[in-house]
Image (cartoon, rainbow, N blue to C red; front, top):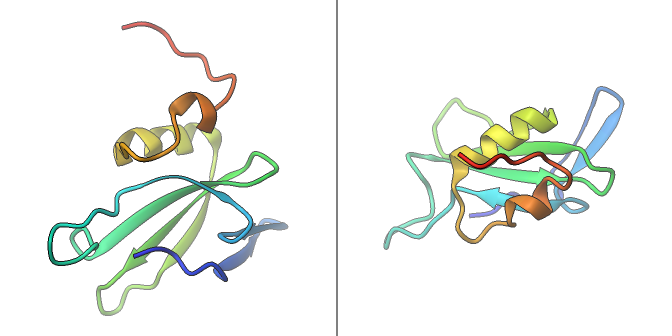
Length: 102
């Protein structure tokens, strides 16, 4: 399950397009029966201009698929939540981000 490539929204004077953005991470995985995680999947994208947004797809009646612009900090937090082993490495998704040793 992936967002449709023609999914586009204009929010705050900026056009966010799945087709024109790079997928950074998601929580979709095959569990042997389907790709949905509790009826929802979240995908994190980065635009060519360095803006971030998420797409949430829902299988639940009464819920709509959503495209939401994110601040860099919110995108970093979502990246950590998604924990996508196949996603972009953190350093590529968030260049110049300061990372400290624990």
